[in-house]
Image (cartoon, rainbow, N blue to C red; front, top):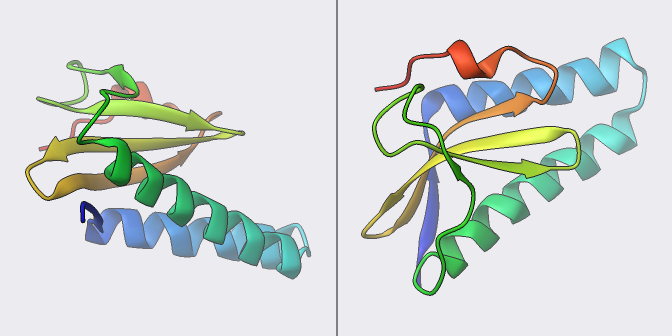
Length: 102
């Protein structure tokens, strides 16, 4: 079964997103739901990796990097033999197109 392996940066992104929504916006239940949804979307991308190429290619960010939008969020990932590597999670309002990912 394909898997979605998350990088350390992606894990930090999830923590930052949860912190911002739960504490800054004071919506802890929403934070939990959003994190669960982002993880589920990444897992769905991995599951579908065997039959479809999803997301938009973003070679300006890094070799093989693809972008997949989910609500106001963007999942930055690469296809791999095991499924996908999730490189980062970003708020769609962030300037992620100028990030350089190895």
